[in-house]
Structures are given as C-alpha cells and as structure tokens.
Length: 88
Image (cartoon, rainbow, N blue to C red):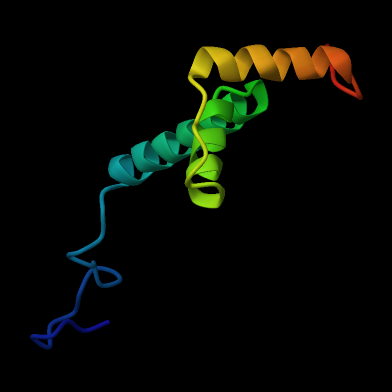
C-alpha cells in the first residue's frame, strides 16, 4: 500500500478524526447507565408526577394542577379502590 507521498505505508490509513477506544467505551457505558436508570425510574413510577403535570398543562391548560403530595395520595387511593393487576 502506498501513502500520499508515494512511499510504502506500514498498514491501513489512520483516520485523524477517529475517537480513542477509551472514549468510545466510556461513552457506551454512560449511555447504557442512562438507559438502565430511565427504565428503573419509569418502572418504579418515579416520573409519574412529572409526566402527569406535563399532560395536565398540555391537555387541560386551564385546570389547576394538584401538588405532588395530593397527586400521590389520590393515585394510591385509586389503586386501593381498583387494584387490577399489579405486582404488589
């Protein structure tokens, strides 16, 4: 294989813009951790109030939004009234 100067090169061309392997691995680990964290918090319901507030403001802009304590009290009361299927 010949380089741009016409001399034989030792191997395949090396890209100057390629990220080092360590950077790629750490970026993958961070991306994986964020995905796991998102999944667990979603499954546990940690984002339920924020999702509810976003929905209320988007779909019912004139209605008052209850505070977080009231939201959870009403949510758990509703689950007790109509248990349906759940793990616990």
